[in-house]
Image 1: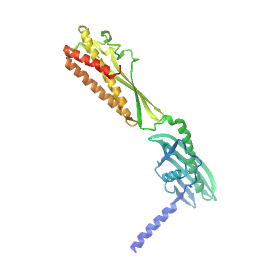
Image 2: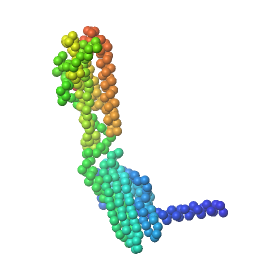
Image 3: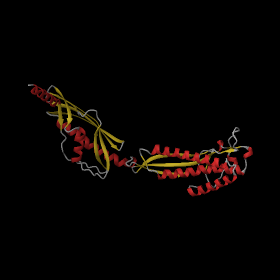
Image 4: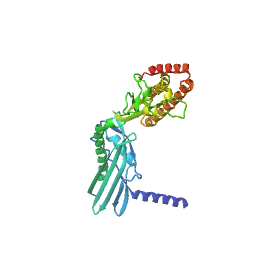
Length: 347
């Protein structure tokens, strides 16, 4: 008796569930439209519930569902009824919203329906379309509901085809990022000088106030500026980067007793180090494999590492020459840096 009682409860529960749900079956009817520039690679239901809505009939409210589940049913319909070329751009269809409210009054059924489908390329939500419909039908409303959903899918596939044809060059479709690098020859900042072999520094370029509490006779303030902008060209993110080795007049200075050719040569070599590191940074940027996901963080990381390397080189130079006092070492460094400037090939 106990075993029979448990089975009876289970059976009753399943029967009650079946009465609360009304399934809608998408017809396997071949679509007249065939996308040419893309194909639907997957269907994802982003809604919290798989229900389409409700239908009120015979004094009860039933939940409407697509047979087989919303995402699976729509994906199956597209795969079996829409001619697709899988060599084209993959696009994922997301179900944002399906809201259907059907009410039976007398011998007719009033149905209001709405769908919102969104389309993604990778992580980019590129378009969404909303369709609305209203109908009064006699008898079962399932045919209207099925037809409305199916037509919404077909119409939105046509719309995304039009959109894709107009905007495909603007949307990144490959993860790789192309980086174009230019070493700047000019600047619009009047207090800055951009490195050039044809334009060495002069004592008059050092216009900043001397720092009286330190022993150095002169100081060079130089650096490497990195600026870039990105855009999408033919489905790929392209970064145009400008690297600028610069010297700042107002922060660089000479003391009166240091205004001579020997001290100036020492300071020029500091600027040579900056120029060499700028060219090395350009080479690193050109040879690094960037992606959409990492290029901004990776550019920043490479720039910071290059700045650390430059500071270490500057410190080593000052240490080995004792800030230009050890004459033989100073000449050795000057010659080495001039040769390195020629080798890096940026100037």
